[in-house]
Image (cartoon, rainbow, N blue to C red):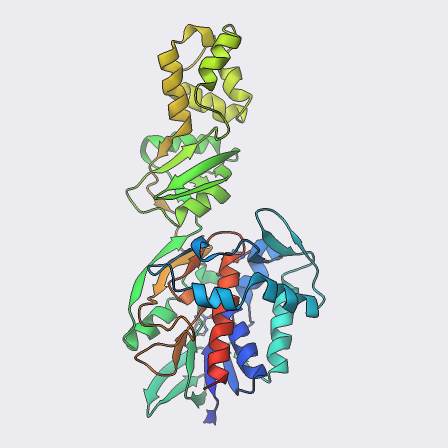
Length: 393
Ligand code: FDA
Protein backbone atom coordinates (compact mmCIF):
# COMPACT_ATOMS: atom_id res chain seq x y z
CA UNK A 1 0.00 0.00 0.00
CA UNK A 2 1.36 3.45 -0.92
CA UNK A 3 0.80 6.43 1.36
CA UNK A 4 0.02 9.96 0.22
CA UNK A 5 -0.96 13.25 1.86
CA UNK A 6 -4.19 13.25 -0.17
CA UNK A 7 -6.02 11.15 -2.72
CA UNK A 8 -8.09 13.08 -5.25
CA UNK A 9 -10.86 11.18 -7.06
CA UNK A 10 -11.57 12.64 -10.52
CA UNK A 11 -9.00 14.16 -12.92
CA UNK A 12 -11.36 16.76 -14.37
CA UNK A 13 -11.06 20.53 -14.13
CA UNK A 14 -11.40 20.74 -10.34
CA UNK A 15 -9.32 17.64 -9.52
CA UNK A 16 -6.43 18.71 -11.78
CA UNK A 17 -6.36 22.22 -10.29
CA UNK A 18 -6.54 20.85 -6.73
CA UNK A 19 -3.77 18.29 -7.36
CA UNK A 20 -1.41 20.83 -8.99
CA UNK A 21 -2.02 23.38 -6.19
CA UNK A 22 -1.40 20.90 -3.35
CA UNK A 23 1.50 19.15 -5.11
CA UNK A 24 3.34 22.40 -5.81
CA UNK A 25 3.06 23.28 -2.14
CA UNK A 26 4.81 20.06 -1.15
CA UNK A 27 1.92 17.61 -0.57
CA UNK A 28 2.23 14.07 -1.94
CA UNK A 29 -0.84 13.62 -4.15
CA UNK A 30 -2.47 10.68 -5.92
CA UNK A 31 -4.97 11.76 -8.62
CA UNK A 32 -7.25 8.94 -9.80
CA UNK A 33 -9.73 8.74 -12.66
CA UNK A 34 -11.63 5.81 -14.12
CA UNK A 35 -11.47 7.38 -17.60
CA UNK A 36 -8.47 6.63 -19.79
CA UNK A 37 -7.47 10.30 -20.09
CA UNK A 38 -7.71 13.41 -17.92
CA UNK A 39 -9.96 16.41 -18.49
CA UNK A 40 -12.34 14.93 -21.07
CA UNK A 41 -15.03 17.56 -20.49
CA UNK A 42 -12.44 20.31 -20.86
CA UNK A 43 -11.52 18.89 -24.26
CA UNK A 44 -15.06 19.03 -25.63
CA UNK A 45 -15.98 22.32 -23.94
CA UNK A 46 -16.65 25.52 -25.83
CA UNK A 47 -16.82 23.68 -29.16
CA UNK A 48 -13.22 22.45 -28.62
CA UNK A 49 -11.91 25.92 -27.63
CA UNK A 50 -12.85 25.79 -23.91
CA UNK A 51 -14.70 28.78 -22.54
CA UNK A 52 -12.37 28.63 -19.53
CA UNK A 53 -13.70 31.58 -17.50
CA UNK A 54 -15.96 34.62 -17.54
CA UNK A 55 -14.69 38.07 -16.62
CA UNK A 56 -18.16 38.88 -15.24
CA UNK A 57 -17.82 36.22 -12.52
CA UNK A 58 -19.78 37.18 -9.40
CA UNK A 59 -21.40 34.88 -6.82
CA UNK A 60 -24.83 35.98 -8.10
CA UNK A 61 -24.20 34.04 -11.32
CA UNK A 62 -24.24 30.71 -9.50
CA UNK A 63 -27.16 28.60 -8.25
CA UNK A 64 -26.98 26.83 -4.89
CA UNK A 65 -29.24 26.12 -1.92
CA UNK A 66 -26.73 28.37 -0.09
CA UNK A 67 -26.01 31.27 -2.47
CA UNK A 68 -23.20 32.56 -0.19
CA UNK A 69 -21.16 29.36 -0.19
CA UNK A 70 -19.16 30.07 -3.36
CA UNK A 71 -18.18 33.62 -2.35
CA UNK A 72 -14.96 32.90 -0.50
CA UNK A 73 -13.35 30.56 -3.05
CA UNK A 74 -14.41 32.77 -5.99
CA UNK A 75 -12.92 35.85 -4.28
CA UNK A 76 -9.64 34.08 -3.57
CA UNK A 77 -9.14 32.70 -7.09
CA UNK A 78 -10.46 35.02 -9.77
CA UNK A 79 -10.61 35.01 -13.58
CA UNK A 80 -7.51 37.29 -13.47
CA UNK A 81 -5.63 34.57 -11.56
CA UNK A 82 -6.50 31.99 -14.21
CA UNK A 83 -5.50 34.42 -16.96
CA UNK A 84 -2.11 34.86 -15.24
CA UNK A 85 -1.70 31.08 -15.23
CA UNK A 86 -2.45 30.67 -18.92
CA UNK A 87 -0.19 33.63 -19.73
CA UNK A 88 2.70 31.78 -18.06
CA UNK A 89 1.97 28.89 -20.44
CA UNK A 90 1.77 31.17 -23.48
CA UNK A 91 -1.87 30.29 -24.24
CA UNK A 92 -3.57 32.91 -26.41
CA UNK A 93 -7.22 33.75 -25.80
CA UNK A 94 -10.04 36.03 -26.87
CA UNK A 95 -13.32 37.36 -25.50
CA UNK A 96 -16.25 36.11 -27.55
CA UNK A 97 -19.34 37.69 -26.04
CA UNK A 98 -20.76 38.56 -22.62
CA UNK A 99 -17.35 38.23 -20.92
CA UNK A 100 -16.78 34.67 -22.15
CA UNK A 101 -13.08 33.87 -22.64
CA UNK A 102 -11.98 31.14 -25.07
CA UNK A 103 -8.63 29.73 -26.23
CA UNK A 104 -7.57 31.03 -29.65
CA UNK A 105 -6.19 27.55 -30.33
CA UNK A 106 -7.62 24.49 -28.65
CA UNK A 107 -8.96 23.19 -25.35
CA UNK A 108 -6.11 20.68 -25.49
CA UNK A 109 -3.82 23.52 -24.41
CA UNK A 110 -5.74 23.88 -21.12
CA UNK A 111 -5.49 20.15 -20.36
CA UNK A 112 -1.78 20.10 -21.31
CA UNK A 113 -1.20 23.11 -19.03
CA UNK A 114 -2.94 21.48 -16.08
CA UNK A 115 -1.02 18.23 -16.58
CA UNK A 116 2.23 20.20 -16.72
CA UNK A 117 1.27 21.99 -13.50
CA UNK A 118 0.59 18.57 -11.92
CA UNK A 119 3.97 17.28 -13.11
CA UNK A 120 5.66 20.32 -11.50
CA UNK A 121 3.91 19.33 -8.29
CA UNK A 122 5.05 15.68 -8.68
CA UNK A 123 1.43 14.52 -8.66
CA UNK A 124 1.03 10.78 -9.25
CA UNK A 125 -1.76 10.27 -11.80
CA UNK A 126 -3.51 6.91 -12.22
CA UNK A 127 -5.99 6.70 -15.12
CA UNK A 128 -8.28 4.00 -16.47
CA UNK A 129 -8.94 2.21 -13.21
CA UNK A 130 -12.20 2.29 -11.31
CA UNK A 131 -12.19 2.75 -7.56
CA UNK A 132 -13.57 -0.48 -6.10
CA UNK A 133 -13.56 0.35 -2.38
CA UNK A 134 -13.19 3.39 -0.14
CA UNK A 135 -12.64 2.73 3.58
CA UNK A 136 -12.15 5.16 6.42
CA UNK A 137 -10.58 4.10 9.70
CA UNK A 138 -8.15 5.59 12.23
CA UNK A 139 -8.25 8.94 10.45
CA UNK A 140 -7.01 7.43 7.15
CA UNK A 141 -8.80 6.87 3.86
CA UNK A 142 -7.92 3.60 2.09
CA UNK A 143 -8.72 3.22 -1.59
CA UNK A 144 -8.58 0.14 -3.75
CA UNK A 145 -8.32 0.72 -7.50
CA UNK A 146 -7.55 -2.08 -9.93
CA UNK A 147 -5.10 -4.36 -8.12
CA UNK A 148 -3.58 -1.51 -6.09
CA UNK A 149 -4.32 0.18 -2.78
CA UNK A 150 -3.41 3.61 -1.50
CA UNK A 151 -4.05 5.53 1.71
CA UNK A 152 -4.01 9.13 2.89
CA UNK A 153 -5.37 11.33 5.70
CA UNK A 154 -7.33 13.36 3.13
CA UNK A 155 -9.73 12.36 0.36
CA UNK A 156 -11.12 14.77 -2.23
CA UNK A 157 -14.34 14.02 -4.12
CA UNK A 158 -13.84 15.67 -7.54
CA UNK A 159 -15.82 13.23 -9.69
CA UNK A 160 -18.23 15.84 -11.08
CA UNK A 161 -21.94 15.40 -11.73
CA UNK A 162 -23.92 12.91 -13.85
CA UNK A 163 -24.23 15.06 -16.99
CA UNK A 164 -22.97 13.38 -20.22
CA UNK A 165 -22.52 9.81 -18.89
CA UNK A 166 -20.87 8.70 -22.13
CA UNK A 167 -17.84 10.80 -21.07
CA UNK A 168 -17.45 8.87 -17.81
CA UNK A 169 -19.73 11.10 -15.73
CA UNK A 170 -21.41 9.32 -12.83
CA UNK A 171 -23.34 9.80 -9.62
CA UNK A 172 -20.35 8.35 -7.74
CA UNK A 173 -19.74 11.62 -5.84
CA UNK A 174 -23.24 11.57 -4.37
CA UNK A 175 -23.08 7.90 -3.29
CA UNK A 176 -19.73 8.47 -1.60
CA UNK A 177 -20.86 11.69 0.09
CA UNK A 178 -24.01 9.99 1.44
CA UNK A 179 -21.89 7.14 2.83
CA UNK A 180 -20.06 9.72 4.93
CA UNK A 181 -23.31 11.29 6.13
CA UNK A 182 -23.37 14.31 3.80
CA UNK A 183 -26.69 15.34 2.27
CA UNK A 184 -27.27 15.66 -1.46
CA UNK A 185 -29.47 18.39 -2.92
CA UNK A 186 -31.64 16.75 -5.60
CA UNK A 187 -29.56 16.72 -8.80
CA UNK A 188 -31.30 17.99 -11.95
CA UNK A 189 -30.03 18.40 -15.51
CA UNK A 190 -29.17 22.06 -16.20
CA UNK A 191 -28.01 24.13 -19.18
CA UNK A 192 -30.13 21.66 -21.09
CA UNK A 193 -32.65 21.92 -23.98
CA UNK A 194 -36.35 21.82 -23.01
CA UNK A 195 -38.87 19.57 -24.72
CA UNK A 196 -42.37 20.60 -25.85
CA UNK A 197 -45.41 18.34 -26.01
CA UNK A 198 -49.19 18.64 -26.36
CA UNK A 199 -50.36 21.54 -28.50
CA UNK A 200 -46.91 23.07 -28.41
CA UNK A 201 -45.44 20.30 -30.62
CA UNK A 202 -46.54 22.57 -33.49
CA UNK A 203 -43.56 24.78 -32.68
CA UNK A 204 -41.25 21.88 -33.53
CA UNK A 205 -42.02 22.67 -37.16
CA UNK A 206 -39.84 25.75 -36.65
CA UNK A 207 -36.83 23.49 -36.02
CA UNK A 208 -33.65 25.43 -36.91
CA UNK A 209 -35.23 28.91 -36.50
CA UNK A 210 -33.59 31.18 -33.93
CA UNK A 211 -34.28 34.68 -32.62
CA UNK A 212 -32.91 36.98 -29.96
CA UNK A 213 -35.40 36.93 -27.10
CA UNK A 214 -35.66 37.36 -23.37
CA UNK A 215 -36.41 34.02 -21.69
CA UNK A 216 -37.67 33.91 -18.12
CA UNK A 217 -37.91 30.98 -15.69
CA UNK A 218 -38.62 31.51 -12.02
CA UNK A 219 -37.06 34.85 -11.10
CA UNK A 220 -34.25 34.62 -13.67
CA UNK A 221 -34.31 36.23 -17.09
CA UNK A 222 -31.80 35.99 -19.95
CA UNK A 223 -31.51 38.09 -23.12
CA UNK A 224 -29.82 35.85 -25.70
CA UNK A 225 -30.73 33.67 -28.68
CA UNK A 226 -33.44 31.01 -28.47
CA UNK A 227 -33.53 28.17 -30.98
CA UNK A 228 -36.47 25.96 -31.95
CA UNK A 229 -35.45 22.30 -32.30
CA UNK A 230 -37.17 19.10 -33.45
CA UNK A 231 -37.81 18.33 -29.77
CA UNK A 232 -38.57 21.78 -28.40
CA UNK A 233 -36.46 24.74 -27.34
CA UNK A 234 -32.72 25.33 -27.08
CA UNK A 235 -30.16 28.11 -27.64
CA UNK A 236 -28.29 30.06 -24.95
CA UNK A 237 -31.35 31.90 -23.56
CA UNK A 238 -33.21 28.61 -23.05
CA UNK A 239 -30.19 26.72 -21.68
CA UNK A 240 -29.72 29.48 -19.11
CA UNK A 241 -33.42 29.49 -18.19
CA UNK A 242 -33.42 25.66 -17.92
CA UNK A 243 -31.23 25.83 -14.80
CA UNK A 244 -34.01 27.74 -13.04
CA UNK A 245 -36.95 25.87 -14.59
CA UNK A 246 -38.96 23.36 -12.54
CA UNK A 247 -41.36 20.73 -13.92
CA UNK A 248 -44.87 22.12 -14.21
CA UNK A 249 -43.71 25.72 -14.56
CA UNK A 250 -43.79 27.92 -17.66
CA UNK A 251 -40.89 29.48 -19.52
CA UNK A 252 -41.92 32.94 -20.64
CA UNK A 253 -40.48 34.39 -23.82
CA UNK A 254 -40.47 37.98 -24.95
CA UNK A 255 -40.08 37.64 -28.72
CA UNK A 256 -39.60 41.37 -29.21
CA UNK A 257 -37.55 42.59 -26.25
CA UNK A 258 -36.67 45.93 -27.89
CA UNK A 259 -40.24 46.93 -28.77
CA UNK A 260 -41.77 49.60 -26.50
CA UNK A 261 -45.36 49.18 -25.33
CA UNK A 262 -47.74 50.47 -28.01
CA UNK A 263 -45.47 49.75 -31.00
CA UNK A 264 -48.14 47.88 -33.02
CA UNK A 265 -50.69 50.62 -32.41
CA UNK A 266 -48.09 53.22 -33.48
CA UNK A 267 -47.40 51.17 -36.63
CA UNK A 268 -51.13 51.14 -37.43
CA UNK A 269 -51.32 54.93 -37.20
CA UNK A 270 -48.21 55.38 -39.32
CA UNK A 271 -49.34 53.00 -42.09
CA UNK A 272 -52.78 51.39 -41.69
CA UNK A 273 -52.54 49.67 -45.06
CA UNK A 274 -49.38 47.74 -44.13
CA UNK A 275 -49.73 43.96 -43.79
CA UNK A 276 -49.54 42.95 -40.15
CA UNK A 277 -47.37 39.95 -40.98
CA UNK A 278 -44.84 42.27 -42.60
CA UNK A 279 -44.76 44.36 -39.41
CA UNK A 280 -43.83 41.25 -37.40
CA UNK A 281 -41.56 39.82 -40.10
CA UNK A 282 -39.39 42.93 -40.02
CA UNK A 283 -38.41 42.07 -36.51
CA UNK A 284 -38.59 38.28 -36.37
CA UNK A 285 -37.52 35.47 -38.74
CA UNK A 286 -40.32 35.02 -41.33
CA UNK A 287 -41.29 31.47 -40.32
CA UNK A 288 -41.51 32.44 -36.67
CA UNK A 289 -43.54 35.57 -37.47
CA UNK A 290 -45.96 33.46 -39.55
CA UNK A 291 -46.44 30.88 -36.81
CA UNK A 292 -46.98 33.46 -34.09
CA UNK A 293 -49.36 35.51 -36.26
CA UNK A 294 -51.35 32.40 -37.12
CA UNK A 295 -51.67 31.47 -33.45
CA UNK A 296 -52.80 35.00 -32.61
CA UNK A 297 -55.25 35.09 -35.53
CA UNK A 298 -53.46 38.04 -37.14
CA UNK A 299 -53.61 38.46 -40.93
CA UNK A 300 -54.36 41.18 -43.44
CA UNK A 301 -53.93 44.92 -43.05
CA UNK A 302 -52.92 46.27 -39.65
CA UNK A 303 -55.56 48.99 -39.94
CA UNK A 304 -58.31 46.34 -39.73
CA UNK A 305 -57.49 45.62 -36.09
CA UNK A 306 -58.78 47.56 -33.11
CA UNK A 307 -56.26 49.08 -30.71
CA UNK A 308 -57.46 46.57 -28.11
CA UNK A 309 -56.63 43.61 -30.39
CA UNK A 310 -53.21 45.05 -31.17
CA UNK A 311 -52.47 45.68 -27.51
CA UNK A 312 -53.42 42.08 -26.68
CA UNK A 313 -51.13 40.85 -29.51
CA UNK A 314 -48.24 42.98 -28.22
CA UNK A 315 -48.73 41.56 -24.75
CA UNK A 316 -48.85 37.98 -26.03
CA UNK A 317 -45.66 38.46 -28.06
CA UNK A 318 -43.89 40.00 -25.06
CA UNK A 319 -44.87 37.20 -22.66
CA UNK A 320 -45.41 33.96 -24.60
CA UNK A 321 -45.83 31.14 -22.10
CA UNK A 322 -44.35 27.79 -23.11
CA UNK A 323 -45.07 24.80 -20.89
CA UNK A 324 -42.15 22.38 -21.44
CA UNK A 325 -42.98 18.77 -20.63
CA UNK A 326 -39.38 18.02 -19.66
CA UNK A 327 -35.73 18.43 -20.55
CA UNK A 328 -33.42 16.43 -22.80
CA UNK A 329 -31.96 14.98 -19.58
CA UNK A 330 -28.46 14.29 -18.28
CA UNK A 331 -27.43 12.89 -21.69
CA UNK A 332 -27.59 16.43 -23.12
CA UNK A 333 -27.12 18.59 -20.01
CA UNK A 334 -23.95 20.67 -19.83
CA UNK A 335 -24.05 20.64 -16.04
CA UNK A 336 -26.00 19.44 -13.02
CA UNK A 337 -27.89 21.72 -10.65
CA UNK A 338 -27.80 20.39 -7.08
CA UNK A 339 -25.28 17.91 -5.73
CA UNK A 340 -23.39 17.50 -2.45
CA UNK A 341 -25.00 19.88 0.01
CA UNK A 342 -22.81 22.78 1.12
CA UNK A 343 -24.52 22.73 4.53
CA UNK A 344 -21.77 20.71 6.24
CA UNK A 345 -18.85 21.86 4.04
CA UNK A 346 -16.39 24.64 4.90
CA UNK A 347 -16.49 27.37 2.24
CA UNK A 348 -12.81 28.08 2.99
CA UNK A 349 -11.36 24.57 2.61
CA UNK A 350 -14.21 22.52 1.03
CA UNK A 351 -13.78 20.06 3.92
CA UNK A 352 -16.73 18.28 5.54
CA UNK A 353 -17.14 19.68 9.05
CA UNK A 354 -18.00 16.32 10.63
CA UNK A 355 -15.68 14.11 8.57
CA UNK A 356 -12.08 15.36 8.96
CA UNK A 357 -10.03 15.03 5.79
CA UNK A 358 -13.01 14.56 3.45
CA UNK A 359 -13.34 17.35 0.84
CA UNK A 360 -15.65 17.93 -2.14
CA UNK A 361 -15.02 20.31 -5.06
CA UNK A 362 -16.19 21.27 -8.53
CA UNK A 363 -19.48 20.23 -10.08
CA UNK A 364 -19.98 17.45 -7.50
CA UNK A 365 -20.93 20.20 -5.03
CA UNK A 366 -24.26 22.05 -5.03
CA UNK A 367 -22.85 25.10 -6.84
CA UNK A 368 -23.77 25.58 -10.51
CA UNK A 369 -22.77 28.45 -12.75
CA UNK A 370 -24.52 30.14 -15.62
CA UNK A 371 -23.56 29.29 -19.18
CA UNK A 372 -20.40 31.07 -20.33
CA UNK A 373 -17.28 29.93 -18.43
CA UNK A 374 -18.68 30.21 -14.92
CA UNK A 375 -18.62 26.47 -14.25
CA UNK A 376 -14.92 26.18 -15.03
CA UNK A 377 -14.22 29.22 -12.85
CA UNK A 378 -15.94 27.42 -9.98
CA UNK A 379 -13.91 24.25 -10.69
CA UNK A 380 -10.63 26.26 -10.65
CA UNK A 381 -11.58 28.28 -7.55
CA UNK A 382 -12.89 25.37 -5.45
CA UNK A 383 -9.95 23.18 -6.56
CA UNK A 384 -7.50 25.88 -5.59
CA UNK A 385 -9.09 26.48 -2.15
CA UNK A 386 -9.05 22.76 -1.41
CA UNK A 387 -5.49 22.25 -2.71
CA UNK A 388 -4.18 25.03 -0.46
CA UNK A 389 -5.99 23.57 2.54
CA UNK A 390 -4.61 20.08 1.93
CA UNK A 391 -1.05 21.38 1.64
CA UNK A 392 -1.32 23.30 4.90
CA UNK A 393 -2.69 20.40 6.98
P1 FDA B 1 -15.50 16.89 -14.48
O1 FDA B 1 -16.73 16.25 -14.97
O2 FDA B 1 -14.73 17.79 -15.36
O3 FDA B 1 -14.47 15.78 -13.98
C1 FDA B 1 -14.88 14.69 -13.18
C2 FDA B 1 -13.91 13.56 -13.43
O4 FDA B 1 -14.25 12.50 -12.54
C3 FDA B 1 -14.00 12.99 -14.85
O5 FDA B 1 -12.70 12.97 -15.41
C4 FDA B 1 -14.60 11.59 -14.67
O6 FDA B 1 -14.06 10.66 -15.58
C5 FDA B 1 -14.16 11.28 -13.24
N1 FDA B 1 -15.00 10.29 -12.58
C6 FDA B 1 -16.36 10.22 -12.56
N2 FDA B 1 -16.75 9.15 -11.83
C7 FDA B 1 -15.62 8.55 -11.37
C8 FDA B 1 -15.37 7.41 -10.57
N3 FDA B 1 -16.37 6.67 -10.11
N4 FDA B 1 -14.07 7.07 -10.32
C9 FDA B 1 -13.04 7.82 -10.81
N5 FDA B 1 -13.22 8.90 -11.58
C10 FDA B 1 -14.50 9.27 -11.85
N6 FDA B 1 -18.15 24.88 -18.50
C11 FDA B 1 -17.57 26.08 -18.74
O7 FDA B 1 -17.31 26.82 -17.78
N7 FDA B 1 -17.26 26.45 -20.01
C12 FDA B 1 -17.52 25.67 -21.10
O8 FDA B 1 -17.17 26.01 -22.24
C13 FDA B 1 -18.18 24.44 -20.87
N8 FDA B 1 -18.54 23.64 -21.91
C14 FDA B 1 -19.11 22.41 -21.68
C15 FDA B 1 -19.48 21.62 -22.77
C16 FDA B 1 -20.05 20.38 -22.54
C17 FDA B 1 -20.48 19.55 -23.71
C18 FDA B 1 -20.22 19.91 -21.21
C19 FDA B 1 -20.79 18.56 -20.93
C20 FDA B 1 -19.87 20.72 -20.13
C21 FDA B 1 -19.33 21.98 -20.35
N9 FDA B 1 -19.01 22.83 -19.29
C22 FDA B 1 -18.44 24.05 -19.55
C23 FDA B 1 -19.18 22.39 -17.90
C24 FDA B 1 -17.82 21.93 -17.33
O9 FDA B 1 -17.29 20.98 -18.24
C25 FDA B 1 -17.98 21.29 -15.95
O10 FDA B 1 -18.68 22.17 -15.11
C26 FDA B 1 -16.60 21.00 -15.36
O11 FDA B 1 -15.92 20.09 -16.19
C27 FDA B 1 -16.73 20.43 -13.97
O12 FDA B 1 -15.45 20.09 -13.51
P2 FDA B 1 -15.26 18.92 -12.46
O13 FDA B 1 -13.78 18.71 -12.34
O14 FDA B 1 -16.02 19.18 -11.24
O15 FDA B 1 -15.92 17.64 -13.14
